[in-house]
Length: 103
Image 1 (cartoon, rainbow, N blue to C red):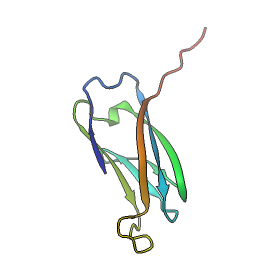
Image 2: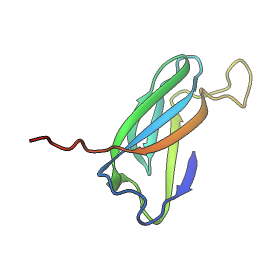
Image 3: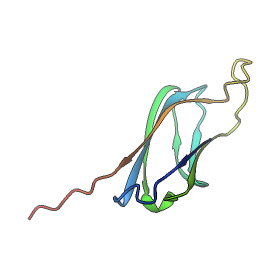
């Protein structure tokens, strides 16, 4: 789980892309939750990159936010109690720009 603060005026776009990079261990499915709401699932075995587009309203502007990762059946991998099914490398939040209509 990671917690982060957002400025009250952090984004003016209606949608935000969440990009997650990491390594899936033993092909576990990783549920991604933003402030308690599931936004998607990371699937794969080995290095993976997944992205999800969510409404700006799912974030708590001006407050603490929480991005959590849940792995069903998580447990020690190869007797290593530090690895539970997914090794997180990075998380990026990017505004989704709305394409302007051409006339």
